Length: 126
Image (cartoon, rainbow, N blue to C red; front, side):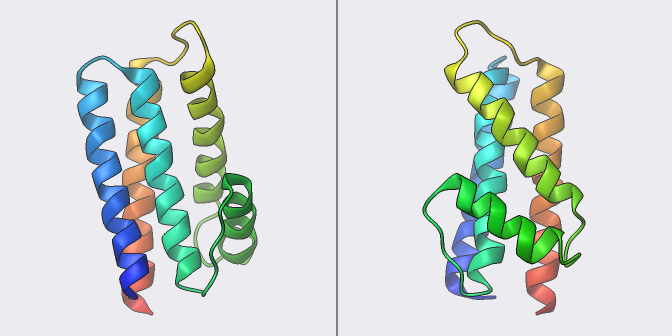
């Protein structure tokens, strides 16, 4: 595994920890945001392993979909989870009223953990 990919996976791990702390403190909106960023870092790590780098979220989403989900390199559910978490992050970050629940946060955090585990297994096998 390359150093940039490893660094991104470590950052994802830290983002999941931050999401867990926020969730424990009752901050579901912000917990979902951190969990989304964990997924984004995971997707970036996987793309970096192919020599691909992007600056925009949408570009990362599209490239991950093309190179990993559509190609069946990883389960396509991870792409769906990434896109759904992005939509929820937008609600949490920009919505005035609290719209995300503790259950939403717990689900997205668990998805981020599972995505990170799958990426580590895939990159370790390369």
